[in-house]
Image 1: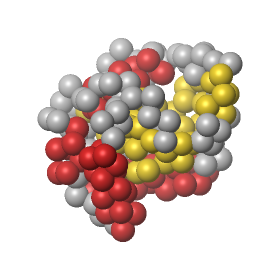
Image 2 (image 1 turned 120 degrees about the vertical axis):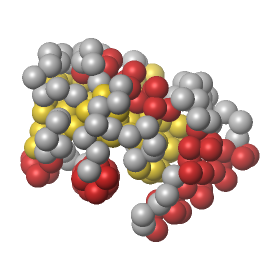
Image 3 (image 1 turned 90 degrees about the vertical axis):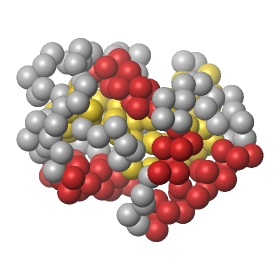
Length: 192
C-alpha cells in the first residue's frame, strides 16, 4: 500500500494523533522529498516495537547517540514501504533473523523532535521525524546482537519497567500507547 494512503487510512485515537496526521499529510503535499534525509526540516522514519509472544516485553536497543534504551527504526531513505523499513531496521539493529508482524497497518503515528547531534563525525541540526510505527513480534529466545555503530546493547525489557531503562518520558508514552493498542487488538498471530 502507498505510504500516503496508509497514513490517510490510519485512525487516530487521540488529539495528538489527529493533529500529527493532519500536519504530516499537509507537509507531504508541499514537499516531494519527505522520504529523504535531504529534507533537513522533516522526513519520514519508520519504527518497530518488537514484542515477545506474551506481549509483556519489548526488545530494545541501547542507542549510542541518545544513551538510552529505545525501539528500533530508521529513515525511509527513499523507500515508500514503511513496514518494510521497520522490519529491515529491526533485523539490522538486533541481528534477529526472523521477525513477525502483528499488524500490517500503522499502529501509531507521531511527530518526534530530534535534537542537534553528531552522527558519523558530522553535525546534524535539529529537525522532525514523521515516525510511522508498526507492531512486530519475535521469539524471546532468539539470538540477538548489537549493531555497534548504532547501539551498544540489545535487551528484552518488561513493559512495566520501561522507566528503569529509558530516559525519554515522551517515548515511554508512545511505547505504552502502542502496547495498549496491541492488547486491545488481541492479535498474537505472526503473519510474516
